[in-house]
Image (tube, rainbow, N blue to C red; front, side):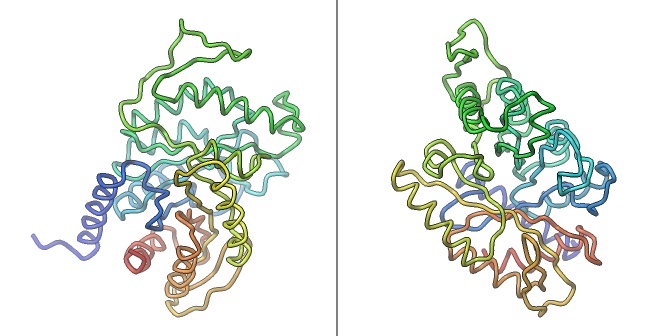
Length: 329
């Protein structure tokens, strides 16, 4: 039976995704020689409605079929007027478990688990569970959060978030390393305990999302990549220069750089690129030009936060996968 063009595209992208993972390992989001693409979930209108689970799982499966590199989920413990996104987000670990069950190749990334407000041993348990369930597809993005009232409700001191973040990162990384160590509140190794399941694949990449009140040298020393928010490219180039200088001071290993990007892809291929809040409005040719410039500047991953406009996310992802991604291969 002759396959339809969309089916052929999906099959080709699945093979490309599998080949990338074979050649590069599971951490294909940040690689020095390519630009990878993610989708931020939930991709639904920014209203006070809760997550539309059925719709989001279908979008996730479709993104996997199209060959996108990652699905990004947020950690929003408490909704309030001080948080700019009114959507009632699901618990990230529950959401990731569902995403792992309906996808096969796409990376599953957190953007970001609020490290100071969650116990590092709980995060380790959840992360290992998702990593094993997804056969090594988890990318663990970690951030500090910055809402004073949220810190207050959780009984945490916002002014101490820098040190809390560092301490929790150390304890989490100790559990996730190949020679697992469980550290108690005093930093002592507790050898009578283990956190299961044990990971059989490559270690889980730890990505710093936002500055988390840390210096870039600290991030370059401890994280495999730095994920930040969208800035106009001349400004982002300045951030990249700072990032490269920080890396040079502390490591010779590659460290990735990624950004989120609000995207309104209009149904007019030649529509010029227009800056909007934290992203751009454009047609596909303008998007190809903007992404090419990002890749040349040294950006390794872009996570699209799709705003609806007049087009459903499903159609936007089809156009990105069918016309934009091949142009940047």
